[in-house]
Image 1: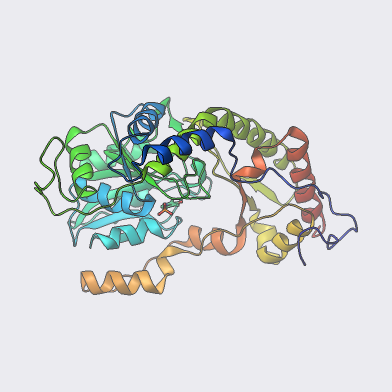
Image 2: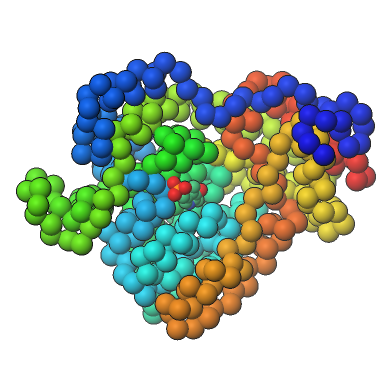
Length: 399
Ligand SMILES: *Cc1c(COP(=O)(O)O)cnc(C)c1O
């Protein structure tokens, strides 16, 4: 049944009006794009809008350096390499993340090692990270899934104790903060994505943030054909590549950044209201927000079916009904630690085929977690009330 048609149980759908559409843009982006177009300096060496974009992106998170790159995937590959990860090194990451966290690691020739997430937060479980450390482990990637910073306090302790690189995959967490400090400054290096679905949408694009001069210089060099800053054009001191972002993307990104503060406030306010409304619906569980999260970027709003309900119904059935009520939901990821392509590629590089036990990720993916996209949180209080009523109506259909 398609969205907008009759609700499966109960005639009239709760919601017939559309939610705010993504992307949001206006003359701001148009004007900035025209400036780039008319300058004739369109590429990533143009330096028309890129310096301002990088500066604003760094300032927003309180980071010393920002290096713009082609997308979030190469941002991860280059950040890991710039921070010292080498082919064959093991890098620990959550099993509950977008596939690029793992494939970007494999692009470098390093081996992703999967660790389960915390049931309450769906974020990397630091205690399991510590158990997974081997002599080959060289790095940890904390993924701020849905826009919620992972437990960076504990992960920093573990990384320091074992002498590991700590990276943040902050693709979904633009503008988020942990204990008042911006994501991108909590690990040694962090990466962001400007892909179309993300909260700053430049079509495609990526950013690397770091406070380390050394990592920033190396990330810049690796994405600029191995050149060095202030070096000659044909002076290549490293093996690097052209992974530059274009001026057009910087122009759109600047326009998008101008709205981020207000959008993040709206998402935070609406998410708080939604969590309050969902917390009293039988069969529904909200995802715990760690009190140390000062700003949550809410790239996704995730909620869960409670284990008893999840055990007797199919998640797909719940989502089909919710969509029929006019609220489009997404089932989310398929567990990465079970992905054959990743396991095979990792085995080829490491010489041993790894098997993983990540029962929380498996149960969350297949039975419990449901996502709403961030644009559903950019509307009014009445929109949020409709979302909650639709979820309550569907949950009640199983009572
Ligand atoms: C989107 C995303 C990426 C990859 O970014 P691209 O710009 O699409 O390459 C990596 N990690 C996470 C968690 C993401 O959500």
